[in-house]
Every structure is written in C-alpha cells, then in structure tokens.
Amino acid sequence: MTTKELIIQIKKKNSFLCIGLDVDLNKIPQHLLKLEDPIFEFNKAIIDATHHLCVAYKPNIAFYEAYGIKGWQALEKTIKYINKNHPEIFTIADAKRGDIGNTSTMYAKAFFEDLEFDSITIAPYMGKDSVEPFLAFKNKHTILLALTSNQGAFDFQTKQVEGKELYKQVLETSKTYTNSENLMYVVGATKAEYFTEIRKIIPNSFLLVPGVGAQGGNLQDVCKYGMSENVGLLINSSRGIIYASNNTDFAEAAAKNAKDLQQEMETILNK
Ligand SMILES: O=c1ccn([C@@H]2O[C@H](COP(=O)(O)O)[C@@H](O)[C@H]2O)c(=O)[nH]1
Image (cartoon, rainbow, N blue to C red; front, side):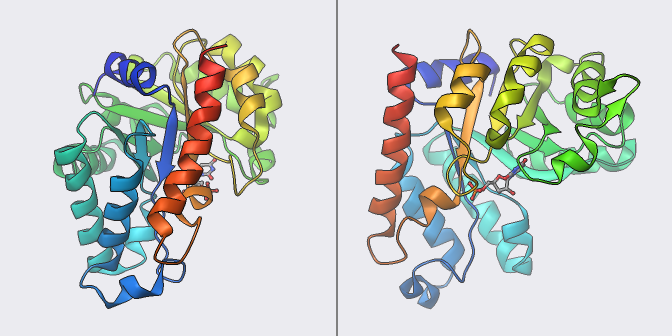
C-alpha cells in the first residue's frame, strides 16, 4: 500500500486508529479455547467487528511465536484474512527485526513477500546496512524504532551522542538512507512532550504511536504536538481494545472501545 492510499483511508474513515492484535490465550474468552484455532477465531471476530473503525492492524509477532507452529499458522491465516477481505487496511508486522544485510533481506522477504504485510518495525541499532534491505521493497514501509513508549527508552534513546540525543541521531541519519521515503517511525504516546522536536526533524513522516490506553498515553496531547499536514499518525491500542471483555460479548466490547477512540479522532480531524 502507498502512503497516499493510507491517507485516503484516514480521510474516508475519519480515523487514524491502529488495532493491535496481541493474542494471549490466557486473556481471550475461554469458550474460544475449544475451537481448532482459537487465536485466528479471536482475531477474525475482532476484525469483523472493528474493520470500519480503524485504518491499520498490528499483530505483535511475539504473541504468535510464543505458540510455536500453531501461532505462526494463526498469524498467516490472520494476515490472509485481512488482505482478502479488507485490502484497504494497512498491516504492520510488529517484529522489531534488523541484522546484517543478507539476513535483513531474508526477514524482509518473510514479512513482505511471504506474509504480504505492508510494513514491519525495525530496530535501528545495527545501522544503515541493516535497514536498507527493507527499504528496497517498493510500496512497503519500514517503521524504525525512534523513541519507544517504555521507561527503558531513557537508558539509551535520550542520551547525548555528539551533542544530540540518540533518537534524534536515528531520525536524522535514517533520512540519508537509500529509499528513505519508505521510512516511518515508532514514537511512544507516553512521550508526547517530545513530538514537537521530532516534527522539526521529520515534519511529514508517518509515526506509529503505541502507548495509548493500557500504557497511559494521551491521544489529545499526541495529536496536539505530533499531527502533520497529512495527519501523519497511526495511533495504536492493543489491550485497551481487544480485551475490553473476556466474555461472549468480547467483539462488541472491542468495537465499542475502538469506536470511542475513532470518534475522538474524528472530532480532532474536524477541528
Ligand atoms: O515503543 C513501543 C513499541 C512497540 N510497542 C508495542 O505496541 C503494543 C502496545 O500494546 P498496548 O496493549 O496498547 O499497550 C504492543 O504490541 C507493544 O509491544 C509498544 O508498546 N511500545
């Protein structure tokens, strides 16, 4: 999917919501556990109930890898289900990969070609030759970790390197990479006060913003400081939406929480 197509969807749906599909078998309604593929059935019900309210889905790959081959199969079924039934929805593999060049190329093939995700999250720590293999894929997006939502972000990301915070070095250096137009960045909603500075370096890039809901990030603040001319934000909520209820009404409860966020977004967009 191109960035242009993503922006069209945002305007059409009055939403820049990304729903995180982080399936934990200990948290989903117990009646689903009797089914052949509870992870996929859970995702399918959530997708059927929420697809009109969001523009992106983000399965975090850890929640699938944790269940071995069955988890991987459920991930494949989930992405195929989204691509077949809702091809207009942007898909994000939250995999946080990145390695020496030839290995990065294989990660890129796995997520872009085999699984057909639109984008993948990448750790910038190994630098240019670990990121550029992902950027080489046309109409696919590489979402670089810049300033993450967790407390540990302050261990390295905000430390001064040659007179500048490391996350700023990541933003500036990555702009020089070949095919950098395919870059997006992760910035945590819990770091709203940093968005003004970030926008000075990357005024138009899309930002994937996790941390609203369960981690306490505030949507209004993120939008106030982080929204660009073309919106430029994908706000993620995972647990706050998909675990709204662990009863038979789980999908409707998820849709209600998704709608609350979407309506808040619609109000912001129409201001
Ligand atoms: O900085 C980051 C990067 C990634 N994440 C991931 O996003 C979701 C957030 O889930 P919630 O349940 O809405 O808190 C999850 O998959 C994280 O691994 C992040 O939180 N922060």
